Length: 199
Image (cartoon, rainbow, N blue to C red; front, side):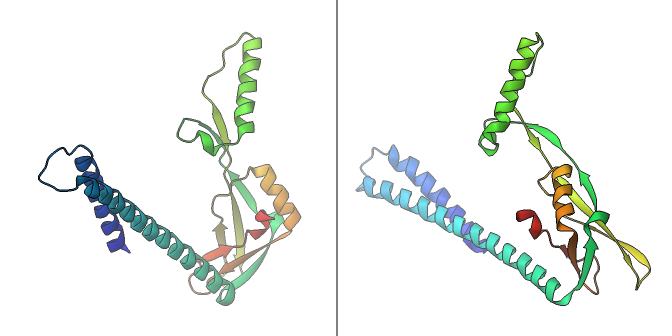
């Protein structure tokens, strides 16, 4: 996999150099420079394709490894059924300035709200920042489980969830119970089933 990335990078670099060389080449030593010019484009595209395929394959392998670990935990791990009402939600909400690089990543209605606030600020005679911002919501579910076998309390924390605390609490209230799959030997290896958030 690494070899393909290196080879793809070399081909892209070689194609890039050849492209600019033969684009401005006016000599007579090399016959048919137009052929080498076209060849440079082909080499660059081949390198780009090879690099893209290798990166995609690496992502797919990582994704498959994660799914495999989750499946193993579901089949061989200990299943804990947790009362959703006992879960704690930790939130970290903030606003991020939208620039030209990430402007397309945000919803239009969010920018519309900003424009509205700017207009209200002008009507009130105050000043409002010209910078457009977008609200970023991040929450985690914290689960505490009293292990009767060891007499210890175990803590399981979900990955960051792109929802605010109020919305997430509605999901938990509707779900009632959450399944947590824990490795029987290594208790730090666990999977919290959050599929209900996609419904």
